[in-house]
Length: 211
Image 1 (cartoon, helix red, strand yellow):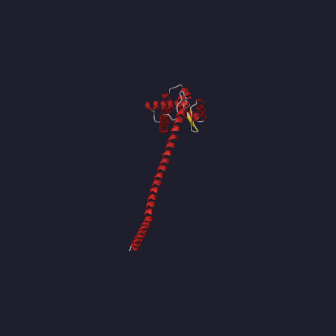
Image 2 (image 1 turned 90 degrees about the vertical axis):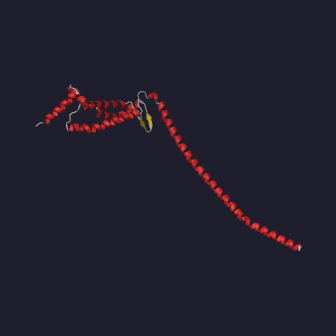
Image 3 (image 1 turned 180 degrees about the vertical axis):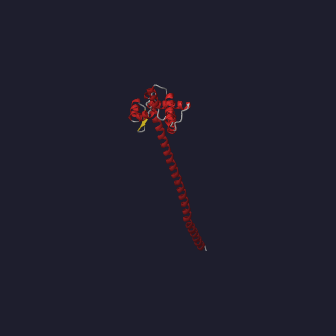
């Protein structure tokens, strides 16, 4: 009996151990899957962090380049201060307002001046003085162009000798032809005033149209 009981105990114990051993691999697989999932999530988080870090580094590099460009421009302007006495920067706000004003006056002359000449419309007192102001502004613009810097291959040039040489290359002659007040020259040559010259033009035009 004792031997049979011992045999049963040993057999039961072996079966118990066997059953325990058969369950162990499934538990290990589950634990391994959990570990792999956690490792994948950690790797994904690390990749996202690396991507965010790369974007932040790119943004910081771009902002740093902009700051360096701004500092370079400021340093360049500070270094040119001793050469820029009575000189205007080409991108200054005052220069932009001046150029826009001249553009509006050019449009006015392009539309109304041919119409006044074609239909021989008499010039009112306001238009007469406005034409004088426009002629003075165009002449003054030539003087400003001799005192305004320019950009050459992305570099700001604020040396008066270089400005004069660049302006005399082409644009001075175009501005001189288009801005010369020929009515003033004609009035001086005839020894009369501008108002009298316009009155004579209107009178001669009226007489030419009479039968």
